[in-house]
Image (cartoon, rainbow, N blue to C red; front, side):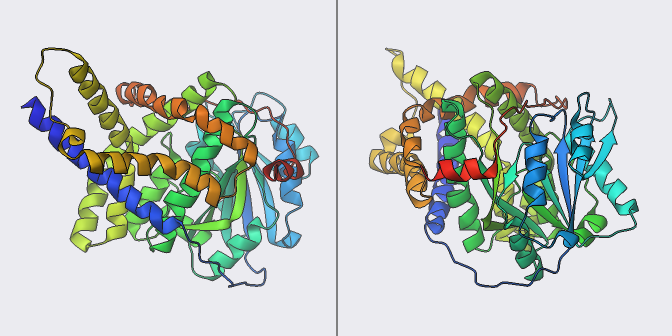
Length: 411
């Protein structure tokens, strides 16, 4: 019984893995868009901040120097339950500081929902809303790309997410490799195939009318994934702009990284539980592959969990002498198994080559497998604590300017 269950599980996981591997080949090429529109869209640029006095100033300076008409965008910083000088620093830089104090509804999703209600009350209206985290930096042409996409019909847009501090530690290097891989071999293939892209928590742009019609409603620990699900269920496909780059600060230590990823996986379990089946059945009934693909993406957290447990069980079973080994795909089709495994592994260096990653990042591939394997215990712990709704803040301390990030990318 257990033997057959494990075999079926291996087949299902292999099919899902093979599907993603197939998709990745569609990210090897990139269509360059030549559609340019004169600046015409107005933007409310929202920055989510909780005790970010050390880094928020650098982002505001960055945003004030965007290559876009200054009269067409305003910057609003959500000072969410701050106990430091974040709001004072924001005002000193001459942009709007909206202070929120709510000890019971904590977290970025709640802060955004509150801020949008405040935004709708203002006498000035905007065509679109852009969202960043306080530790971010953005390329100066970001709003021009958002303007082009909005004028071309996009309603929800995700920018290219890069890492602000890829060389600070082996952990930040691992995040950087993951980001380059996801941008090129997860997001871009879906763009090329006309599927829905997924939101990444920052660098997001939303059509104002759509936000007003839908409401935010994404208050889980992974508000980006939750809003992605809500959009796709509604028939709105988020798009991906490869050329609009946002740089995100990553935690330096393994402990801080594990804490951050635990929150992500707890939220991912929550969203998968609530949205997978409704979206999957909706996709089947409508014969809508985009909805099916997004539902499968929501299920990814269970793929990691079950894949890790299945691998551990098979390894233990194989190592105990005198016990009949369970059936495994490796023994049934070793050549296919080896090919898929090798192809899955080499995707990461291939992504580094295609994305022209800095030469010094390549040595981080030595420790990268440790980072990837660490997702197993993080995901397992997240499964048993998935009912946790307590937001955990990641402290940001690296004061870096855009010029420094861009210069290090070339080295």
